[in-house]
Amino acid sequence: MLSHPWQPDADEVSRLILERLDRQAFEPLRALTVGQFREWILDDQTGGDELAAVRPGITPEIAAAVAKLMSNKDLVLAARIHRSRKASPGTS
Image 1 (cartoon, rainbow, N blue to C red):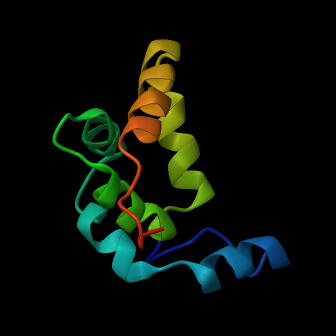
Image 2 (cartoon, helix red, strand yellow):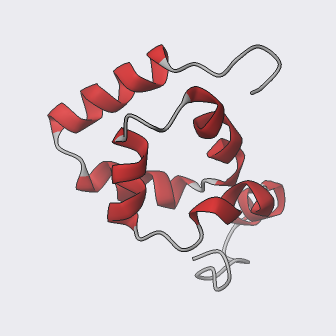
């Protein structure tokens, strides 16, 4: 998705998202399928620091694809996990 974005010059918003995307932050997720990314988010071993580290590398399309695979229960759980696993101070 990042290597071959669909119509990257289609509009200014898409261009801006791709320009500001942190490709290094995306690197740990590169080999994951959307389903595997969902499992990683919900995994007990995934902490706030890991979530904060990859956040700048996630495009809106990737976030939407993961959310589409999640049930309502998964979405609520993911939100709780995110809130309870906040990154340590000094990370964003």
